[in-house]
Amino acid sequence: MDMGCSTGQFTRVLASEFGESHVQGADVSKKSIKRCRKRNPKLTFRYISNGFYRENEGKYQHVILSHVLEHVDRPARILKKLQSLLRPDGSLIVSVPQERIRGDSALPENLFNLSRFKFENVHRQKHSLSSLSSLLSETGYSYKDHRYIHSIIKAKNKKCFGNHSLVVCSELAKA
Image (cartoon, rainbow, N blue to C red; front, side):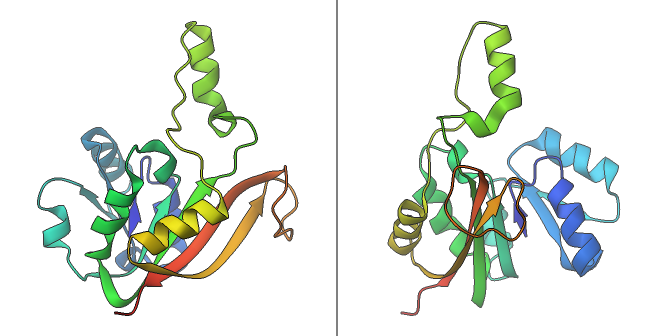
């Protein structure tokens, strides 16, 4: 499950790798889901509404939350909700931008805001490996692995200025 699928671009990439019947996307935006369904009629896209978590309880082996947590005020709340979607042996994969300057990963939005003389950072929070690991632990997950995704150098997996994203893989903590 690609949670917060937005345009469905990453969902399509996952589907090309794992098969259309094995990948789904979900988003809180009805407009995004409608657009995704129109552009990708062979893929399943779900609108996250009131019954979403209950209807999909224990359904997914893997849930991917890519570039979502930095946009919400209460990330712990979302992470706790995601637990219900996972199978007992499932994993949660979280990707967050690695900003050097507050909001710099959201360049198109920042340029738009500057053009109208109104700056509104679309990123509500900034996450590091330490803060994300703590947040995951506090919300019932255990850390498995992480990787830094560099903007240019593919094989580089170190914290550095040129990183684009941090990806952390976790699983439900054993009771």
